[in-house]
Image 1 (tube, one colour):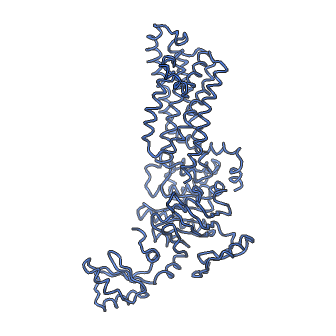
Image 2: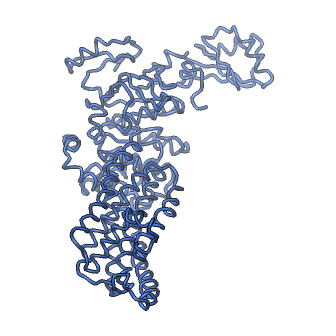
Length: 345
Length: 270
């Protein structure tokens, strides 16, 4: 879709029209994407989840297309996992509608679950069983025959690089291996949509990269990925399109470059000072001609078009930082702009 | 996926789904069955030896009129058989449920598939029924070897044991799925299982209890299981009272089944 940056305002009219003729192309109500209706795999409207008084998901709308990698980016407690559980049809929405693969998520939950793959946030493997037995039991849940499971097990363990561990018990495997096994398990029914809730949380950097690599390959093979993350690098690497969630609401949505160009400047100048000079420097730069200045506890962020030029201009004002860094804007900056908070705090 | 949607609407397929859930327990049991068989054989040998033969010799010397004129061993063995069913069912329906929903979260993994909470519940009950049948059959074999069986009707005690097991397993699993800590299970054993084991007519006739306590004993499902197993083993079973015992046990099992389906759903679909 080459319609980056095009923002269509909410258009209930277009959605009504689509309901009448499925083949028609409609505007996504919120994120400026225009896709044929038949390619929309998940559509949420006013989706809400409350637990007693607490509203975990607060009336969100989104659409997800076949073949894309779609992310929910936000800090812990933003409502990402609650949203994922509703998409996984194991958590009935309090209100709003959620249509998955053309079916209602509540009325047809069982049929939908048969076509989803789920990688939960916490490992739910049976640690007493072997790697192969885990896939056997799980495949049987989907009603697959033993021979089909055996054939897919060989292929999937090859794919997640666990072929040599097939007969081993799961318990002693490393965190990264368990995660890869969970991914293999989620693929046993050849799902049309793969849901990944914080797929690399708790993994060391090396294990994360292996998981990312496998997920990227899945994406290349055309598997539709839906993932939640609070790592902006994960979101940038994997997601074609994402929504930024905060306090149960969607703050913004689009592709990573789109979001960055819309909510941030091309470059960011990071300045670090001696703790004693920090406040004084912030004062000196208060009227600096940057698009925006963020004063964090440990550094100043100047959002500018040209970082080097800004650094020179700052020095010209007599500001002498301890260290300085000029970098590209990231989703972290988008998040900071949208919510006033950092992602991984 | 026409297959999956057919399952959603056709009740005839429900059992198939429960059997898929059963496989999980069977594959796990494959790892531990040897140890469990040892316990299943050792328990009846020890109890029948110590109490049936050892204590029984003393009891028999003082006359067994109140036991119905049979040896203490013949009186005790079918009572222990029914208690074994209860104990097996309780062991399967407490900590394993906690492990599946909380410690290992294998239930959470399973509800992400076409299986529904009720399928997981029924699948586990099926496994519990199988384990109860297995332990009861082993117990019965040991009982026969001790010469404690008086009637071929004792074979009918096997389905009675399964029913007794379910009368405990279904309500206890329904309770276990609502728990967040396993501490309540120790209370259940201390104030539920042990008093039932001791005072539901297993070791002595309920008529020996103080008058006010007797109705309590008659109200417990274990007493009905014990009475039924005993009458079958001694060849004194009567149709009328047997049907009442079966109906009473079935009531507990069905009530537990309905409650369990509700509580499983509430715990796993949040």
